[in-house]
Amino acid sequence: MWRAAIQTASLTIFRFPTWLSRLWVLGQMGLARLDFRAMPEVKFWKLCGSGTGEGFTPVPNTAVWAILVVWESEEAARRGVETAKVFRRWRARASEDWSVFLSATSARGTWSGKAPFEPAPESAPEAPLGPLAAITRASIKPTALPQFWRREPGISLSIGENPDVLFKIGIGEIPWLHQVTFSIWPDIDSMAAFARDRAGPHAQAIKAVRDGQWFSEELYARFAVIGSSGAWQGRDPLKAHERSAA
Image (cartoon, rainbow, N blue to C red; front, side):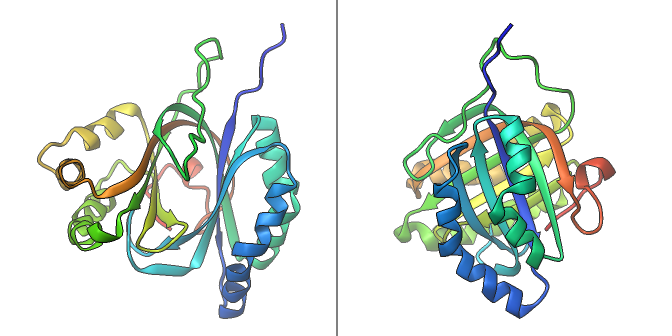
């Protein structure tokens, strides 16, 4: 029986070891856009820098950059990450790169005015058992920047100290204003326990955001992790099944 392709997202992170390669990738923030506009199997994409520390962070990490793409299918995602010119070009300059492939299970909110992640339909086969991922993305109102960044270090520290987090990285399109946290958890229980901790900085920050209306746009999405390729810090964080940070 014919079955519709299930949308798949990929997040690929690259480490650029030298200042020359970091200047090169900075130029790619404009040039690489031409590649994605010519790829019909791509439904959404973002080129992102990263931050130091855990989760949202105001201090850029000039060595680590990321490409987030939503593809029309898992086949297109794996083929694109492996063979598309933009990925091969970045990989040739990087000292290491790692990709993780994701199938959305829930999503709410928008990113640049779009709802990029489509949860798999109920008729689709169940996602394989294993780790789950979460993406939190926000556009911070300029007037709310001082309040947000005073509270944010506590959230990042709580993510970094959580023993259940298998991998985490903070990325974004524009430093200080557009922030994305990507994290991988071993199961739904550990992810939910972190979110439910009403006394923790995460829950308190959410309340402050709602009360103060700090964000002009926000998106929250959860995913089944359906595969990975490459290595980060010399290993695949999923196969090693140990905590890792960018």
